[in-house]
Length: 123
Image (tube, rainbow, N blue to C red; front, side, top):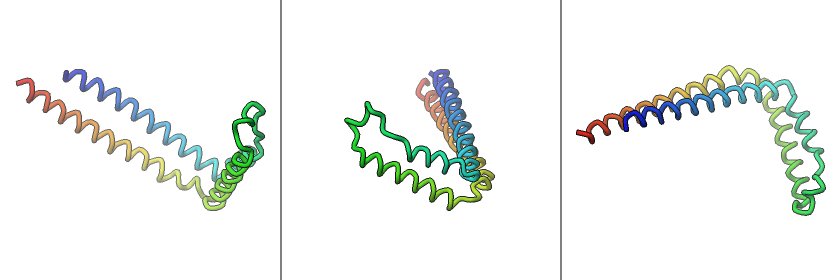
């Protein structure tokens, strides 16, 4: 049972590490894209996206237009509010890794407690 516990911990830590790495990369990419203005041009293209013919019978055109306008306004607001978004990468990405470390430590401590509990139960 103890071996299963540590195998499960290793699997959880591997998944958590992959998630943290992807999150750090995504945050870095997103903030650099916002700083370079690439997001606002992509949002404008998305705002002009027509509803596919096969989807139009099931979707209200006014709802889609409102969603597109809201998306475009939110991204434009974000690009004006965050002109120096790339500088945020300097502290947000390390913050992601600090969070990874805290959660990893909590998982290891929980596994140690479970290991101790299993040892006490088997006596």
